[in-house]
Image 1 (tube, rainbow, N blue to C red):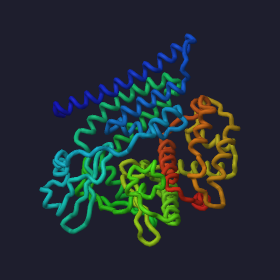
Image 2: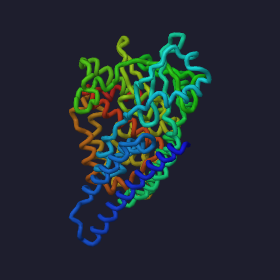
Image 3: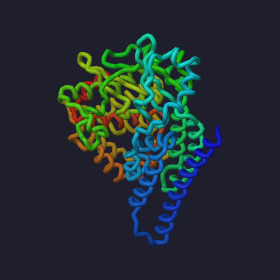
Length: 442
């Protein structure tokens, strides 16, 4: 690492350390004032301030810091709702860097002058995220490709960030949140970043998906293994209309000016394809795409339409026996059996066996979700306000949920995919018959 890069790493560590110290100060002051009976501030207000500070600092950073904030925003039953709400504002997009900084990495990957491999390279990025950015190019064969290039030195930054985030995790544990759960969560984030930093794994994942029997409504890029390495991934350029161009709410669409005119029927096709994708990857592929940001999806108007899925850096292989238990969980939900639901959650590891959970509380969740999942007619999520109702349920028994439930590898990432796609379906404002899509798997 150069002297300049070392200085940047120190600056990142300093920003994270300063944030950690500020959060620790707020927590300790509130605890001390509460203990002395001098606190005029309730815990919700403290959590709001902590959430705001976390979002502001993490949102200004690429790499692991930003990614960790995005993952934390998905954990609805572990963190206080006020912190989750603040972190939910973190954007997945990032400012691209100049192509000249990335060109040496591309040269190293292809192993010869770029003009011998590419007939054309667009040096303006067509997409940028927390770990790297994507450029359009064309091979001499005429085939269009996308080149995903990792930011220089981002791996070193991530290692430095991780040390600070582990310290921050201990501080967050002072709020009363299960420290074991926080440790598990940070370990899972570390696993995710290690996987995403190695583009060879993404290339192998893309190749593995193409060895499966993909449905005709699904498009996944094909990798060029001989042109890729740990920091560069060359794959087919799969064009489509970005998913968020179909979003109906201007407030939620960062590219509202590009919003296209779409029919209710077309949005229904898209929403159903997204829903089928969520289930197919779990129950058919045993391999789940765990970055449900709308920017990773597009729609191609071929025939009845096809869903295009990008960015397979974040995926998780699922064991068949684990998926079978998940299938049993769906069956118990369908049959509205609270005790059986609790037993299977214990087997899945999501329930903490050290605490007894009032089984009757499952009835609140069944009352909320059963009419949505098992309705015989299509439902429109944007009319139901489910997310606010979920927050109300969690807030009403937060301590009970915090003690009784814990993040566990596979379920954590399945939850992230489901929650992320919930928001995609919300913004599409279209109807989906979840019952007909779920039935084959139950």
